[in-house]
Length: 132
Image (cartoon, rainbow, N blue to C red; front, side, top):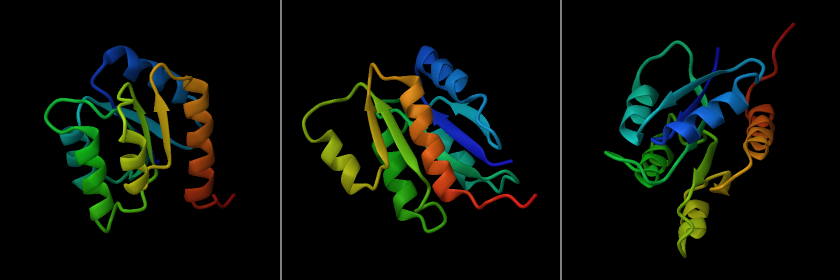
């Protein structure tokens, strides 16, 4: 089953996103606390591929920017849909994320329903149709 990976170091935010996405049909939701853990999962030969990523920007060990840069520079993951949920609204953040090819940016506080809606639209556009 394809996985949606949530990369968030704040437990409350991670739990909120996980609850909002838990009932998405046809995907599993997994949470990790930093970009380094996420990159390790992306690089592993897991039987269940990551089909989308939701990440914060400000995290320990590897921030969201570095994670997204690695994803976009790696041929295997370059087209992975990425959504950013972050409290970092400093000048230039959205422009930088746009240059990195991020599909959506939700500043904190955010609507979990809006994140789920955007994710569903991205998954419908990126996942192959299932054969009955």
